[in-house]
Length: 448
Image (tube, one colour):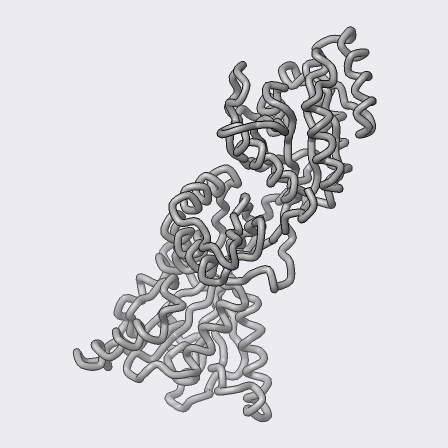
């Protein structure tokens, strides 16, 4: 799991939609999304919390955060709604400020403008409810807000929404291009592990032929060998690799290059099957290989090989070793096999497929934030030094592996991040894949 100290993951930019109550923000959000998601009702204050959605325009992706109506002198529930809107502005890359063209500029609108100016965020001004040409003159009066050109739109009928969306994209930082479905060849699987744990034997058993050299001397395989193998009706490209030596710098000659090629194979793979000798105690080498796979962000299946050579006592010890030493890899798929006898080798296909499915999982921004809202309400971040940082909202920056970015009001403790990751796994599965959680802390302004 990563945090804000790592290189920043490129996330879709965030647009906060703000305005006073009942100006049609949620209707406009639905128009931007091109689908009916935000709850709309002709009563002020239907939207209370920040609600986030994934949006796309002209092939570019961004996140829309719908907020409750903002009022500067609000009390009680209304004050909380106003605070939510201010937090959304603080965490956004740009702001869409919605006003009602049919009633003109209100004192509340002027107050919102002051908040927007202090935020120093790019602002796009939408003059809503311009349903015909006569209303366009009313929209033009919104120039007096000093936020630049008011874009005359009708959220209800779609009038002017294309120009508004173009202006929004211009205000947002460069967004990732929309992901296109690409045709790809067979999924790539690397078989890795320390020397002489049975990697080549496993590949041979899967291929049902003597494709690679097998010898009972550690270090027989030097070059990675690619093999197309059909498992459970699915063709995979298996990369058999030389065993990873204790440390690359300690290896010499061909061993040194074999170790480099092994790490290259991990990078080339989408899922790694780490073969561990179940008949021997788990070693530091085994843990280092597992860590290499996790750090490379690859899906993971742990195959405990040579199960036929283990007795009851050894299995009891192995259970304890797994509990003690592999606690950080609890999420990995695990199978007990014997490459020699073929025991449970047929289960490898299911484990690989499950790991790949988890590795590529995408959670919609709406579903993710509904989940985050529940866990933050039930288990808020502890107060430290009189401050309680809050998770404002989150988005999934990428899949392969699933990487999430939390926008927060302050720095989040590593322990709380681990808690969020654990709950993400409980909620959405992610068996067999690393999950990365990063933080983008937006410190609140000291001068209000």
